[in-house]
Image (tube, rainbow, N blue to C red; front, side, top):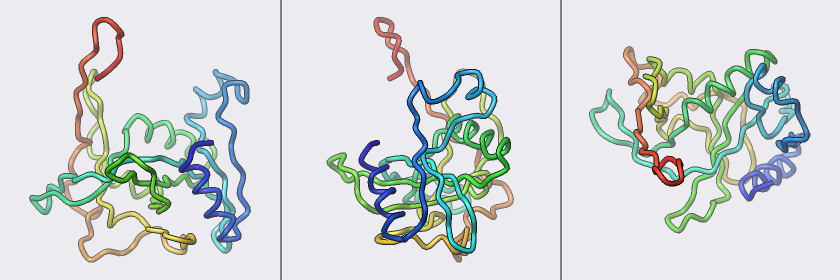
Length: 190
């Protein structure tokens, strides 16, 4: 369990939510089954008056993301589109809600015990077109669209109902494409 997953588990315990950690080790699942069901989230949490929600916990640097409808950049998080597709497949197969729990890093790369949550249903609103082969797509989501939880979770609403209505644009931008070059000696993306 990494640091952000420990923060998340601690937050669930403090909020008095029953929680299960889903083991991600290779020995804990069948490879073929994983391909059929998509990516497994990290936690299953029972939220009072809402029900069970799966959470995939991520650590990410908070970035400036382009907001086409505003014609400027705003603070936000970047989510890998391929990761989203796998979690969305899991959500479809199990007919259960899946959310991201994002923990930002500070300028020194240290994780901050401050959680931002967002359901996949809102992430979908920021996706317009599929990407082209060979490109690395990401989804840019303004921080205001996440629910922020400093000490305890408040997941009573799926959306902040912000005045900007970022996710309600008529023509949302497609996933931003980041291009990576492969190192010829190691074969790794850079």
